[in-house]
Image 1: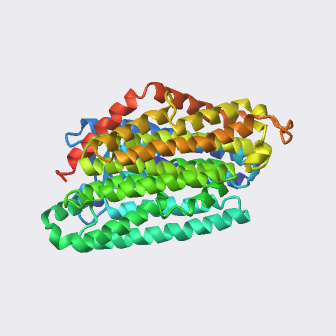
Image 2: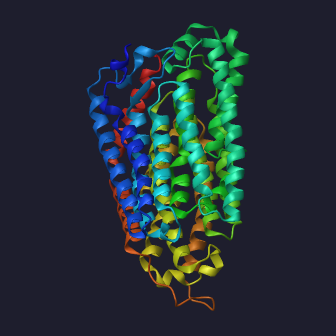
Image 3: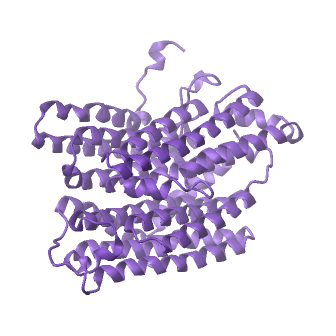
Amino acid sequence: MDIVSFLTFKEPLIPIISLAFFAITAPLTEVMKKPKFEEISGIWSILGFIISLYFVFRGYSYVASSSKGYIELFAQLAPIGVTFYIDGLSLFFSLTFILLGIFAAIYSLSYMKRYKGMGYYFSLLLLMVLGMVGVTFTGDFFNLFVFWELMSIVSYVLVAYTKETTALEASFKYLVMASFGSLCMLLGMAFIYALTGSLNFVYVSNQLAKISSSELITPLYLALILILIGFGVKAAIFPFWTWLPDAHPAAPTPISAMLSGVVITTGIYGIIRIFFLFFSVISIEWGILIAILSAITMTVGNVLALLQADIKRILAYSSIAHMGYILAGISASALTSSPIGITGAILHVFNHALLKGLAFLCAGALIYRAGTRVLDELEGVGRRMPITTITLSIAAFGLIGIPSLNGFISKLVIFMSTVFANIVWLGIILIINSALSSWYYLRIIKILVRSGEKARSDIKEAPLSMLAPMLIMTILIVLFGIWPQPLLAVLERASSSFLNQLPLW
């Protein structure tokens, strides 16, 4: 393939190109050395996110018009060169990442004024989302690892952005554990390459299908475990969750929303893409392993959330529990090859992004006005910030799984998938954990709205630029709770197409 053909403009890749361009140009406002120009970098980054989101929607038309149900770019370079692979699964995850990025960027316009270097901050935010979108668009392990490391390195920096001691310590802990995960992933990729002679997803899948399981069982189990650890660290799956309760609360609130809302779900995407693609073709039974990890992860997350006194740590532990709920759907599809489990899992990825993103943004607004993260010190603050408290309550009820909010429908689909997969015990554990989570969410709401000796009267509502994304997210939560059919239809097609493609690969 000549260099001219290689550099030919590819529209499906515009989301990546757009995010990269705006990330490079956002810090230019720092050169002006005037505070009023710092907001321009925020508006500039929001424009970049919107353009990227538009072209992600455009990508659906390319995928729909493809006879194969997916798009391959630079496939001529395989099995050695990098390849981009875009299907409904890729686009939906990317849409979720970029959408939450828009809300975080709008919220940051006011929230980040207290810190210097907003241009650099927005550049890092764009780069983090670029890494996540790149992970979902890649068609080979080399590309995946490059984008994975981009996302990870930028997130380390953003956790430590405030330069406070606790943030630096949390960032270092995050770096150490995530680097360990990346090393495990790299070793797993090395096993895959040694067995197949390629890092391209299509070639690897085809080669694995040609080799008998008896020849592969030991190295493939090693690769399975190593890759699961790599993705599991990022997704905060038990027992690799210990970095999350420190890193997520220590980061600036918009970054906490991104980390808990979408960054950890890149690990979920990796598990879905790689495990179904590679390990299904050789009949390795990994579904029951994921089911066990699911049960432990959701239980550990919810129990530890009950013990916290910091509102952001409560939400962080809750994110661990929700990764367990998502894994339940994945395990159901792994055991039955039915799309219902993956449909429920991906739907909950989207719903959790909105719900947990909103919860963190609301918590950040409370902290922004009250100056504390300690829950007992926020007593009565909700009475002075009614809009923030109402939106936080809706997010909390959605995370619990109250009917008419979007969290209910995705949990219901996941529960039904466990019934169809004959792992009802996991569905029952999911219901028990959902009930358990109501304890700490109702505790938060109770403290915010009650009037006692500690109640403060010097608090006022959050700025409009912080309220705007919170209100929009609340509307979406209610809308998709009452009318989930469009999302379900898209995800059912994407899940069925993904599972049906596996034998063809």
